[in-house]
Length: 80
Image (cartoon, rainbow, N blue to C red; front, side):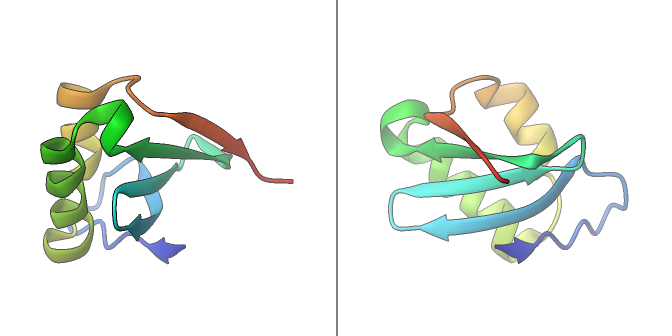
């Protein structure tokens, strides 16, 4: 996973991973869990916007998730 830039300095997101039709997000409050958001679970437009916020902007991803996605993840992956 790639470290999230967090240019605002107060994001709840710590890391992310981008795939063709998904984005995986790790949050600071749940460091042992990875949230998988896919085209199927969250919609293509939402996933593409999340990718842009994560990779190009480095800010706004946590806010976008809270306002638009909420619990529309496909699954939570537990890290050991």
